[in-house]
Amino acid sequence: MEKQPESVVVVVLAAGKGTRMKSDKAKVLHPVCDRPMILHVVDTATQVAGKEIVIVVGNQSEEVKNVVSQEAEVVFALQQEQRGTGHAVKSALPVLPGYSTQVVILSGDVPLIKAPTVNALLNVHINQKNDITVLGVRLENPFGYGRIIVNNAGDVAKIVEEADATETQKQITIVNSGIYCVKRQFLEISLTQLRSDNRQNEIYLTDIVEVAKNHDKKIGLMICKDETEVLGVNTPQDLLNVESLMIAARK
Image (tube, rainbow, N blue to C red; front, side, top):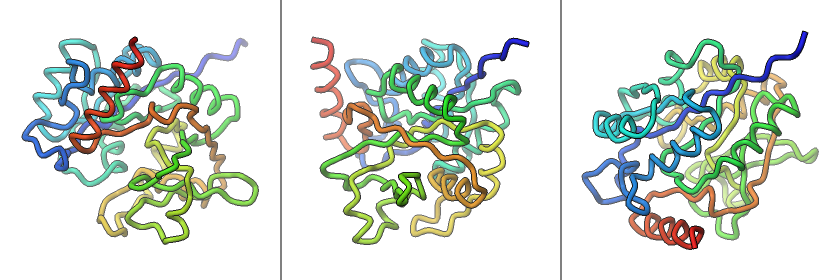
């Protein structure tokens, strides 16, 4: 029998409040080049998975739904409380297509991510038969990002958030982009094992890497060649920076 291709669903995390934006508007609705930033991410997701897209909403959920629904046919999942990225993905599980075998996780506040990069991540993930593959990036100034801890064999050992990192770990320049590809079956199992015993008292999605490690699962890492693609928007200045990069890329 001919092997069937993997069925991919993209989950976009778009539930956060974005308090550092100093705005009443939901963070993902702030415009980048005259379009809400979430729509740039949805464009990329559509190129990767067609209509197999789940948007996790929370803060100003109806407004986000209305904006996205005008431009794309997607499914929405509601995160009732903002309890971290792991909790957000867990909120999406009930509405994932039953036949999907691989889950790509994107952030609604990372509007410069391109489909070729996500497809490359997916290809690495499938070809290496990984249970989880992390998109990392090297940054000269990694402040604010989770650090990817790599062992002597070059494998991903764990991801440590900035708030929980030691001074030594903060020197690491390979950081987590927040973009992953995860085998559906492993994702469902691992999310049940996440705990909120950290300084933020949140359920971190990054902890599934440690779950994978503890269960001898295969963890892959792909380094994004263009660091600007994975820039997140957390402040008004970040928004200006991302818009400038998008304008420059269009020239």
